[in-house]
Length: 186
Image (cartoon, rainbow, N blue to C red; front, side, top):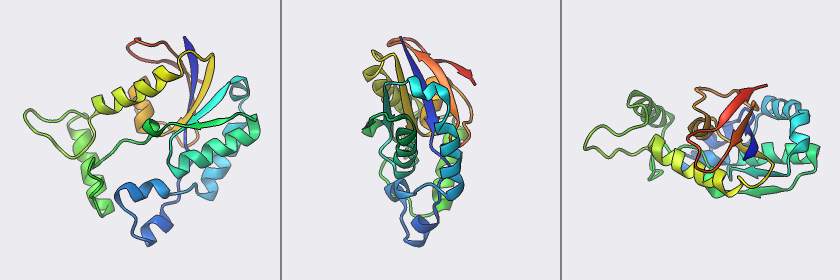
C-alpha cells in the first residue's frame, strides 16, 4: 500500500498557444500563468509533500513546471511518466479550434465517458483513461509516498472526485488491484 499525493497542475496560460495556433497535441505546451505559479508555490510548502520519496509528473509543460516548483521546495527527484498525460478529447489530435475541443468534452460528459452502443468516437473513454492511470499507479505502488503531478480528469479515474482546483493536493492510499484509491481532502 502506498500513499499518493495527487497534485493537479497550477492554472495554465494558453494565450501563447492560441496565438501560435497550437491545437490538438499542441495544447500540452501551455505553461503556468503567473497565478498558477503562485498557486503551486503555496501548495509546494505543504508538509505532507516533504515526506514523499519521489515526484512523478505528466509530460505536459504545465505539469512539469508544477513538478519543478515542488522539487525545488522538497529536493525530490522528478520522473516523467508519459502515461500520466491528460485525457485526450481527440485520440487523433486533429481538432483545430477550442470550440471543437469543448464540443468533444461536452460529448464525453453527455455520455459519461462511455461510447454509445456500437459507436466509436474520437475521445478517449473513461475506461481507457482509468486503465492508463492505474498502470502508472501500479508502477509506484511499492513506494511509501509518491507525489503525482498531473491533470484533474486523469486523477478523477483513481478517486472519482468530480473536480480538482489548480494546485490542489488530494491524499489517497493505493494498493494494486484495489478498485479505487481511498482519498481524503486535507
